[in-house]
Image (cartoon, rainbow, N blue to C red; front, side, top):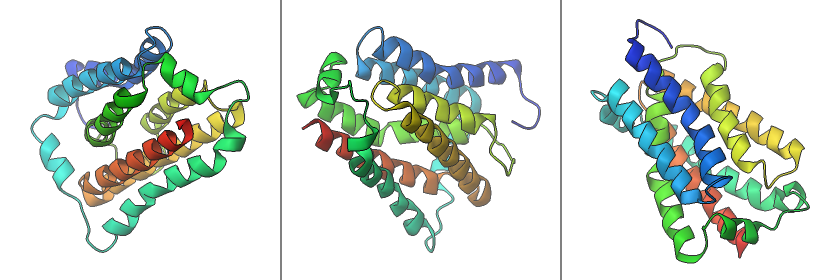
Length: 213
């Protein structure tokens, strides 16, 4: 976070940062509704994006694509799905039954398909517009926003993975946050992080779908 910022912008940034943590804790663990958790999170992100970056949010997601390296980077988004399918047998908590967990949070059948489509094609736009676009950080090294972005992903998988793999998810997502922010800083746009994020979410949710079958 650099430059002079209004108290409202700072407040919106804090709200956006903490929103996924509350969404996971309340939506998944208390209300037992995964879709409700995501919708609440996204509503807060949308409010934050409009309040902080409304004049250039659309421009950012449409700029910064490099035709030489862009496709190669974006294809890297397939890697998380492959890793999940490969590591799931050894990474999953021994006490968890993933199909029963998804039933508990009302994500089965048609509801899972609708959730997956929404998560793949809405979530990346909002997350990149907030977590990268609303934080004009010039830091070369990982920063606190990268860490907080990683933290809520680790919280979300905590019920289903062994602790060591939860920690690996945290480290991986901190790296992803740093990588996407670096791509944004270098290219002055969010096109590459956005497309990579979309491909990654498709690959991840496909892997999850295969696992719960």
